[in-house]
Image 1 (cartoon, rainbow, N blue to C red):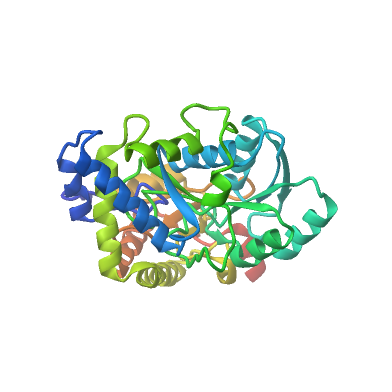
Image 2 (image 1 turned 135 degrees about the vertical axis):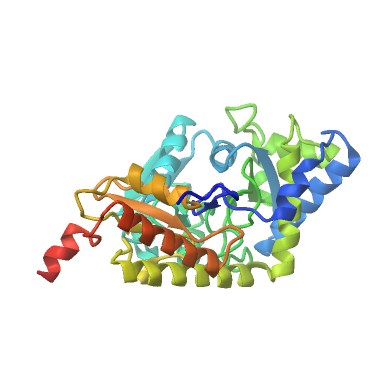
Length: 381
């Protein structure tokens, strides 16, 4: 039976289900030059820095647009035009990182592993020894296409030991997975409002090492994506250069209030871990098998093998689960058919249990009997 009596629960990697106070914060209009709005911008920047203990070494530069806008801004500003970026890839967002680096006119080399294999510090060590021309390394911390968690601390130490610059796409880890700028050396970390800090989408931000950003004037080949210019303008005027996402910014401020009240990053990780465990346990009872080994799985988003039953199509499966109040996400892998279920947002284990029940009912309605992937069935036989 369809359930349209409430907003659906978004079990996606973003946008996410947000808390009511966060949504209510968007009911007021703000002037972009208003001193009260600019004061909120300043507070949000400070609080984002504090989440990763970067207050004394880095600056936070917010940018209009999705998180990818901010990744482009970081690359286009922090990598000199004659720089050489090594991009570490084990999923779709690593490939996007490499593509935008090339489109910014920077030299890019890539190192790609399978989508269920971590990039290791040993890989990075070998690559940096082999090519001294590399100046920067790009890493996706939690690869959203599968949920795999790459070893940031070990890779950051290796990059720093070689005297190179590390740019981290922390889109799906910031605010949930521990990151400490004082013990994990990086020159830039990029995230966005609509992920683990549970704000609405529409604003990215770059936490950049101040001593590095100060030297980057003139690097950017883009006007709107010039991170150095955005930072300098904010420092001088307290304002955004161009029309800011006012409603998103004040909603993010409300979301950060909730983040602090909950207990910050440790509490956020604990809740997401409970969500993940509830989901995986319930899905296993239905016969679903995760794509990743649990040892390298972040409790952010889980990729499941699609059912092997010939009656299964993702569109029909998605529509039926959505009609029961839960929005899933398609798979992003090229070799095997999968779908993804997010564990993040303003939700808890109860919502995950209800989601599993909705999937159970959907399997019955669509008469899907063979849930395990074909490869798993063959292994059992």
